[in-house]
Amino acid sequence: MIPRYSRPEMARLWSPERRFRIWLDVELAAAEAMVELGEVPAEDHASLRRTFDGFEFSAADVARIEEIEKVTKHDVIAFLTFVEEKGGLPARHLHRGMTSSDVLDTTLAVQLKEATGLLLAGVDRVRAAVKKRAFEHRRTPMMGRSHGIHAEPVTFGLKLAGWYDAWGRRRAMLERAGRVAAAGKVSGAVGTFASVDPRVEAFVMRRLGLESSEGAATQVVARDRHAELFCAIAVAGATLEQEATEVRHLQRTEVREAEEPFTAGQKGSSAMPHKRNPVLSENLTGLSRLLRGYAVPALEDVALWHERDISHSSVERVIAPDATVALDFALHRFAGMIENLRVYPERMKENLELTGGLYEAQRVLLALVAKGAPRQESYLYVQRNAMKVWEEKVDFRAALKRDADVRRVLSEAEIDACFSLEHHLKHVDTIFRRVFGEEP
Image 1 (cartoon, rainbow, N blue to C red):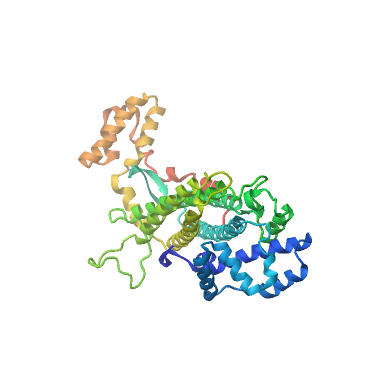
Image 2: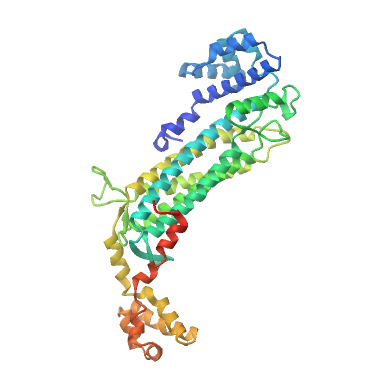
């Protein structure tokens, strides 16, 4: 992922320096397990520890490994060659009975586990921001819309409560998927443990905080594990897009009920000095498209030939860092946007009053039915007066009071009783308790 859409905390996990250090951790842990099994001399392992404990790969080290790889055409062999240059003869014991996927897949599991931790922290920041603003606007009334058209009143807090609820589901999904993907293997060629004891794998996984891939592995960790995580990332992107799109709609000039922060010195257009555009939420919409795109190749990686091929490798080298970096960036961008979102209750009130109470049409319909009028006839009575509001710009309540069919059933007082904003907000607290539990 390009630096523009990267946070250093996440990007660092995918750097060559970090990747090679995890490779080394896998190799050293396997060798340590083999010491306990009597397969590697303790003094050789101790020598390796003296050389490599606390060792951090530098840019020069990465360049040297890449130089070796130009000859070997094999990244793991190039790495092992470099380690032997540094560690001397004791390094001959590294990679004993192992295959490249033991190192690569176990390292990917570590990276995905750490990446998931950062993503969950991002989700937690989003949920905290959304919750705070939801309680701030719990009873801030606004027009609810369906098909983009005025429907019935809600509150801005209720809208945000729905977002908070969604992020609870996204968190659970990411957490589970991250656990599933955090599985490595040290079972050798084609996964039979023919050349490496199963106890080595168990030791390495405990040391790295992972779980073993599965009871019957092939030469690689099954890619359905990774696909589950990339699908969870894609769904998180879809939730981001849903909520970013809502902000974009609310910021439209004709609506202007909420607005992204516009900071000092910010400029909205190179041509039009008056513009304040929803660039943050538009950016989030675009990043969400990328996140969905990464899920498809992850699903296609599941079908490998026989015990393994490497058609998944090139895919994962791109999508693993890009998907996690992009979602991490997007989560923090969205959280910052919500923390500083400008909300305009007065504009919300103006839009509520825009149709002169037309949003009470259902209440009038129900009142007619409750007094014994047939439902479909009642619907027609209410609808024809509602259409007058649209087409003739008459007052809805006054039109109802002038309608003979309506007045045969409802008195003026009963019509007036149908017009009450509080009616629509009477269960706000109930919904908040369902979403948030007790008061913050």
